[in-house]
Image 1 (spheres, rainbow, N blue to C red):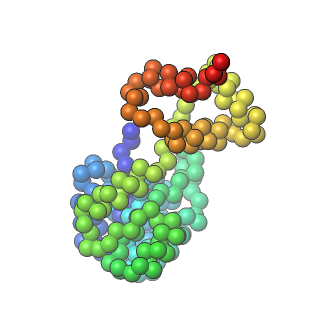
Image 2 (spheres, rainbow, N blue to C red):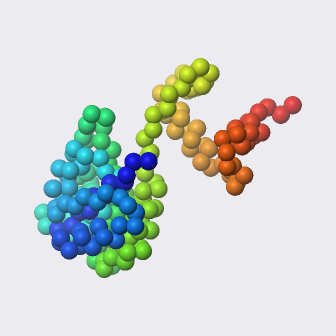
Image 3 (cartoon, one colour):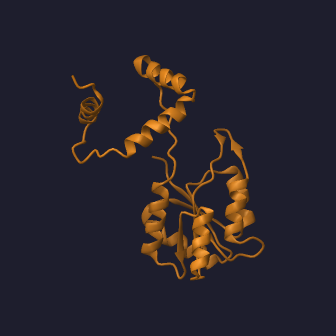
Length: 195
């Protein structure tokens, strides 16, 4: 798995350093930006796994930064650069601010002063929900099945795979799956026609 890249955005250098140090147990790469404008430039040309932003910053606050990041579309050699999930870090213990941030789409809100354990919990949760981009090469029967399903529902193969994986995610696999053979047998047992 590639190393997670986290962008920390805060106009106060001490806060950027403190948050960066709190992320040390994750062994991730931490980049810093002193303003939303600087962060937007980084997001326009680099891929990040997560953004942690302060709420109150001069020129553009954290919520407006989030909105602007989601409005912008950028492309690199690998295609469109996805907007990473955002965590809002704020000293304002205002219920309305928290509710509004969640409605806007922030994955979590961490209150200042930053508690290391709380920050790690929020980051792990946000990263667990990020999209993993993989490339799968199929041949033979596998390719035929995926192509046939795609044509049947008039969707591209990626959309079909997302639906299949989404349905699998709600299945209860239990703890009995610890090898590829057991996974194959489970699918055979659950999906083979019963005679």
